[in-house]
Amino acid sequence: MRQLGIIKLTHEEVEALRLKNMKELCQCGCATQMNTSQSTVARLLSSAYKKITQAIVEGKALKVEE
View: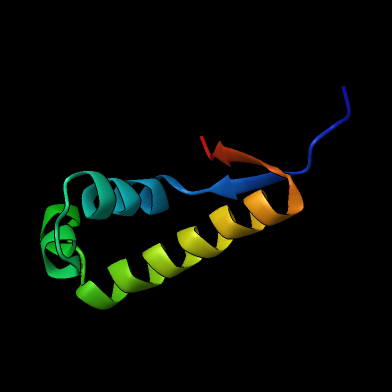
C-alpha cells in the first residue's frame, strides 16, 4: 500500500465542525460553546472545510493533531 500524504486538523477545527454539523448549532452558538468569538469559529470552519476538501481531492489522509 502506498504512503498517503497527511493533512492535520486541529482539535479546535474538529470541535467547530462537530458543533456546526452534528449538533446543528449556528456559528454564534458554536462560539458560545467554545468560549470564543463568532469570527474565530468562522475561521476555524473555513480552514477545516478547506483541509477536508484538499484531502478528498488529492487522496490524502486526515489526522487530528494530538
